[in-house]
Length: 225
Image (cartoon, rainbow, N blue to C red; front, side, top):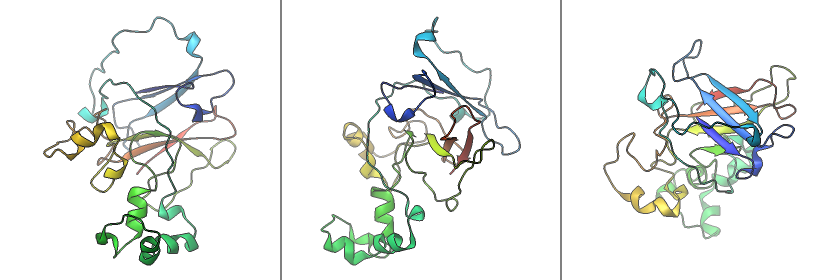
């Protein structure tokens, strides 16, 4: 599913001497939540030998979007801010004040005047797409904290498995290299430059994997948003 090296993604914080994260999932919906089951493995890259030249294909899958398209990642560190639902009431009021955006000289389209917080959420908060760590993209539910089943610590995002790297309101996050293709019309699911992995979770949602900050060996959990 995904293989990330510490040398490429320093934010991983693996346990012990591990420097490689491998995330696998089963391309079937599993009860009780009817979603793919995931497994997280922390390993030493030096211990990985006899690498297969061609990954094995699953015998079958519930949906074509459950079988990723093989591709290489080009990790990039970015700055993002919390979703407005994660802000304090005071800060939520600030980002929802149209006059403040105007006074700041921000290049904000007038269509955001009715609900300025949308500009914040779409252009500054919780970057869309596959990412390590970062802020959760709330929307289907209000913020829902996850707690470790072993030690009750509040869990933190490890990896977001995204159906799309950007959407209609998040073109500001499109990499410069992809902006020409992003402007092209007529893209369909599985053929869009915003969907290089061709993975689709739920109704083009995101699956977020969470881990315990006190012990990566504790069971992880997930949430679809």
